[in-house]
Image (cartoon, rainbow, N blue to C red; front, top):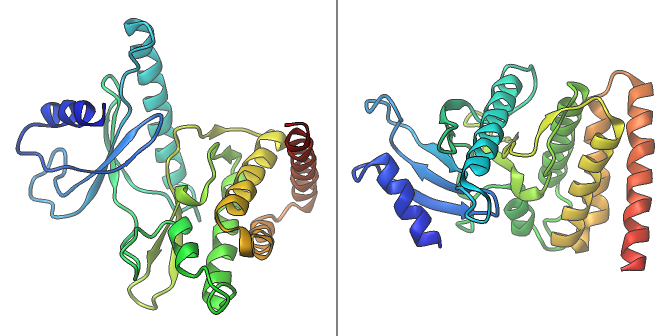
Length: 256
């Protein structure tokens, strides 16, 4: 199926449009390319996200769903990119009728040759010597703060995992700056329930992939998250609901 979808994307873009598949999930394929969709003189790297049509759905219904979700993701990306303090990729272009989104490429290669998402960064430091360094702490504090800024602007991510947080190193001082990516399930929400679920999903992701050091990692994430809030009453409400969501999750785990 992957070969068929890649071939479809290549035909859509044209034979001379260079692409490389870098990830494939249930909802979308993600490619990198060195070619801008409109201006061939721009020498940068870009990301193309393709949301393929689902053959198990009626064709007309599927086209409506694909267009709606692609448009929703683009709108969310544009709105977030205009908010102060939130780091997201730059929106370039889209073709919602065919499920395509172009955006700037974020991230780089880590010392071990892997891509610089939070998951790989923590795996790179997955040993007793490096797990609790000041660098790791600052990265997690800043990631938590990014999520807090997102929530205080009344947006939720919907799929917060360590793979959907990308780190990019500043040239001037080598500091890692976190970017939130993949807004396919994101949206505007004032509900503390949605924010609590966001926090719970990330906590579970850290527990499942970085279990040896997850307690301290989640503590630092929450510490950074709190720094984004000026309204302490709002923060208290979100944290209270987060505890309730966490309790429900434990009960489900116990019951199987």
